Structure formats: structure tokens, C-alpha cells
Length: 342
Image (tube, rainbow, N blue to C red):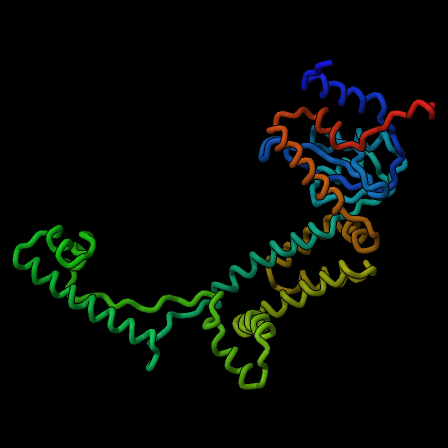
């Protein structure tokens, strides 16, 4: 019997509504997903113990989160990102549950603060333009190119004095008309300097690499890794402090002793690095969840994976799927009992 596409979708949503089982939850992860990026966001809840999606909500709000959590009074652990709306909703809907800040988002926040601080360090550690080096074959090529350009410059000035137009001069010597107009207004050809070396070039760390090579260090991989760190250490003492604090915080998240967080926050606030001081103040506002992230094994990794699957389903349906259909496709499909089992 022929069946329409809409009939199949209605049957799927109806099947999920009728046979969906409400299982007790103990540990969950909660995160947001974009219905329309920048405008509307929903919420996904993942059962961390069963490794399945518990629910997909249409909104991202503190009240909506609280109302949903009140339906599951047995929840003990809730892993979340740094979104303040979820923290408020958890305090209202499940005040006895332990909130766990996601370790990935903690490291992401630290990285963003380090990048801001590194921006100012890089400005202070910028390399000057390189002078000419005697015997450099590239310098020989550049000198020959300048001599050729100088001859074209003199020829263009001579033809302009003879009454030739910019267009005629450009066609004859093979250059752009605007270049001719610029040359005519100058008395001498401007000297072009070598541009600033980029940090991606080995020449950026030439002095540092020469010292390490002379000391007997011949491993290319080790030299490459040490060059960036060593150059930054020499350029900015603040980088040494920032790197040490960052390594300490990463070690804290990999350990199981949350009591060391207080000492880290104390040192970060006294570091005189504005970005790390801001990071410490942000952690202080969510200190209990940060400590639980170290002491407890749960994280929002499963939620991130489910969100990727949700995005794939949305794209496959050209963004036209309703929240009910997305929920039906994300929740574990309930199976009807077989005839001999009834």
C-alpha cells in the first residue's frame, strides 16, 4: 500500500510519544544547540550513564531548564558549559545536584585569555626589518632587480620630459600607468626594505637556533618546539609567568585534588597579567563547579557528540524539521514487543 512521506514522519513521532519510557536519571550533561545561529537556541540533555539522549528542548532558558529538572528529582550530577542560564536553572530545578563545569570549556576559556595576553606580548616582541647581509645570494638578486628598476625609472622620466603621455610610456617600458604617474612625481626611486620576518619563518628565530645548534642540539622537532617558547621567554618575562600558570591549571584538571585550585587562583590574581586576572575572577564566580570538574569523572563530551549528530540531521532535512521530529530522531527508538513476548 503506498504511503506518503508525511505519513511516515507522523507515524515516527507518534511511535516515540506512545512508547517513550521515562527512565530515572542520575548523571546528565546539558548543553545548547542552535536552531538558528545567533537568533534561536535549544537545549539537549544527555544521560551520561546510559550514553543516550534524554531529551531535546526547544528553548535555552533558566526557567525551562528548571521546569525540566523538576521532573527528575533523582539527578545527582549535572555537567554543563559556562552558560549562566543553565547554572541558574539548575539551582532552581535541582538545588541538591552537583554542578560540574566542563573541563574542555575551562581550557577553552584559558586559551582565549592567553591569546589576548599573547597579542600584547607579540606587539612588544616584534622583529625589526632586516638589513642587507653581505654575500646573501638573495641580496644579489634584489640588487640586480633594483638596477633594472632604476634604469626603467630614468627612462620613464626622460620620456615624460620629452612630452610623452603616461599611457605611451607604460606601453613602451612594460609597466602600469599608475606606476609611471608615481615615478614622474618623484626625484629618486624609493628604496625598498626587506619586510619583517614572520614568526612562521625559521629566520625569525635565527639567533636562538644558532645558539642551540652550537650547543649540540641537532633534533629538528625539538628545536622547532623550543624556538617559539625560547624566543618568547627572551622577549617577554610575562610570558614565563603566563606559561607556568597555564601548565599548572592544565595539571589541575588532569588531577583529582580540587584543593589546589585556591592556590592557583591566588597566584593568578597576583600575576599582574590582566587576562589571567580576569580568568581567575571568572573562575571564582563558579568555583564549586570548577572544583567538581576536578573531583568528578563526568564531562560534557557526550553532549558535544550528540550536538554534532543533531546538526547533521538538521542539515539532512534542510533545516525544516520541527523540534518534535528532531526529538523523535535523537531519542533512542523504543521497540515494540514481539508477538511471542506479549
